[in-house]
Image (cartoon, one colour):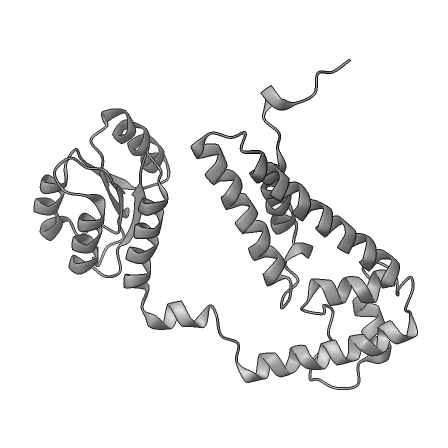
Length: 262
């Protein structure tokens, strides 16, 4: 909402569960939001023209109007308004529908820019990887030492407008710093994790929700592995923690199937 005087941002919360409304209201108010609560979609739609909220939290499973319809109406009233969809009964169909609704309002540029690399960025990466090949040839077995890529490039970098501290490929950097010995150990670990993950899925010991949680975690691990081909995200502590959490979710063994301790 635009105004000449600064005011707290407005958050519209729509849910037919009073407990959820109270909880979100308390949390959002403590964060500086002015909260407007509605228990059904029709009342929320009626309030939109005058309210024009800065953000909204909408239950997908409203009784009178589904949350996706309400999302479209909120974005139509104010494309800048941010909308979060909530559900207490998560399903794959609901997740895909929410993603599609979000992409619809993100626009084609926001969708495509995530999956394209400009030629300048690609050229930089290729230059780094060619330089890395030369370093590997000089230190093939044990590498230059962990966390020494930036130091090694001081000697081996011969092009580029800036000093390269990272390889923009976790696997290439691991090969440079750890050599073939460390790299092969990591490959063995990846193969082991992959086989263990497939075994956990094949065992079919989970309930429906737990199985989809395991599949989601496995998909996340694959995505992280693919991103590591062009970035160094696993060297960031937050991403490393996320990787460990996903790994635990993908490989955990239900208590009923764990061997008895002696």
